[in-house]
Image (tube, helix red, strand yellow):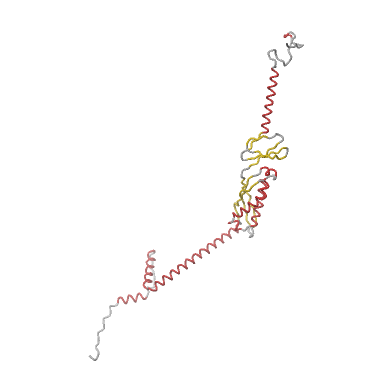
Length: 298
């Protein structure tokens, strides 16, 4: 039995029902259901908002470092979906890919007092995300400054010939100089390469003259060696021709034929007297045998 409510409407004959109790056929009341649905929707919305604020996505080549109320958490968040406490935690992502950093050109004076300008490139990567965030403010800027300082130091300790021809050794020394302090920052130097060495114009001209003189010296040495070998062969040929005088005349005639075949010109050549005498003797008739004279005794 429902208790009547005073002050009911005239249509109900002075009787009424309490607000929110529903009709006799609905004992729970429609208003209570609506309030429960609204509360559930509010909780769901609050949960969605919380998850949206707490969810973070870390990529495959990244690692997440979490600070809770300014204090570093020991665990490093791996790739994938991770949750933090909104308003309490702060997630900082660190890239683990190899970074290619060009080093601006540095001017310096070599050990043999030559002014040069050298630029390089550094390849490095982060191996300890926590150290890269906590121990140094900006590890990229720190590596860049260290690379520039080390490059100037290498220039002062090296000679010009080493910078131009022995770069592999200089690259290794430069890598060690940068990697020593970078290890404390959670950074590993993979490779350092010297890209270009710029020389003053006067030095370029001097090196060009030096190279030209060296090439000319080698050419003269080669020519002298060739003359020496040719003289030895000519001496052997002269020795052979001295035994046969006719071979020298044949060689002379071969030279005349070779010269006349190229250009039609008049050649004035000395004619050996021995050849003329040979021809005169060949043209003279053979002498008649002298008659035999008898002795006076006959």
